[in-house]
Length: 287
Image (cartoon, rainbow, N blue to C red; front, side, top):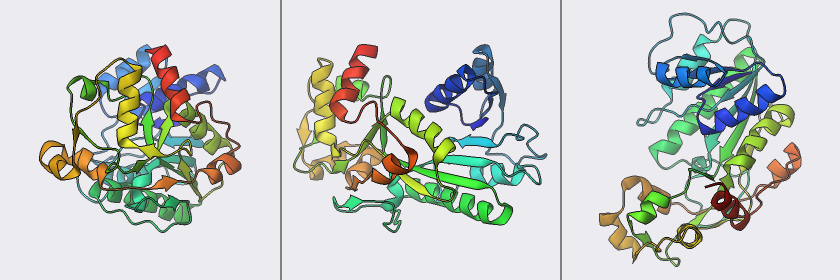
């Protein structure tokens, strides 16, 4: 197994694989990150995908590749994916599971969205992910490798909650103006990644969420109440244009409800945290 970009999700995939006796190699951006992984018993090396790779990746004899590395922070393309695919040794035909984003659908004005909906990325962050998807599918057609794309909703879990934002009392729009949002607990995401590698259909995309959409205001309020923090001050969306970050505003500008039935049925998934209430309770118990 090869994991490209071994952060929180990758570490959990790697640890589970090691327990099954699977050999795991990891590629990360910095030597510091690689050293930390090696100290945990993993095979890891640094590879900066922002630079050209002069020789083929000799570590890619693996048939299973989890590509979890994000695109660069700007632009509409993903040159990191381009460099990775170009560096695969000739004749290598791995099975690649790629974590993309539901942002490739763009704003759907609150409609239910399944995988048949045409993509319509409207911000560069989503355009970069769509570019990576297309690169993978073109690579698949050219060399005969296998690709499974996971379009993942907002990830939450221990260490992935807006506690610092709530502590700073960063404002949030009212529930009437907050868009529909979708989430998946990190524990379930790891299981879904593993199931996609084992049972995902080659060339297919899967929406990854718990199938219980809510809205951003409700999410922030639930986290605040559960952890004994004051709820975020309420502002209007118009006021938010001057007070909220560009990143948060981009999320507030898109509304969709994800249909996850294809994921459940194709991958044989039984979610450990099928709704936000159960997932947040688990976060509190593990914090």
